[in-house]
Length: 190
Image (cartoon, rainbow, N blue to C red; front, side):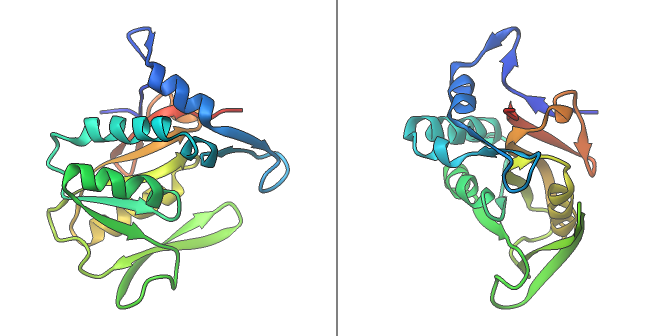
């Protein structure tokens, strides 16, 4: 069983690109509500070299995996997904919140801490057997990524892996979400 992979340290050596990525993420206390330590990636986006390094790390991982599509979770998955897809020669599939996509959609609901939400994608965006990676900025509980996996698998996609820039410490020990490995670049800053 493959576990969550965190690149922060390999063989006792810390990759300086990952140190720069982690340092570029701003922590905003008590946002959006008291007790939350929000990891803000927008400060990393202001540093082109660091942003490019993050994209290149993902591209290097998936380059030889015959990926046909990159599915990005709204909204921050839309930041990382398209440049990764272009570099891999793959299509980009936006996974959106309800009522944001025109035309016929397929949706998957999931439970939040206080209620439910859904992800939607266009019918026909992915074909059966296509190899897909799912990109988001952060994995906290895994609920959104599980919904994305379910949505893509319902139409026959082969979800290879979920990839996130940031993961909460509980993901550091390793886990799968819906039977799929999660690849995380850095742990959450506190």
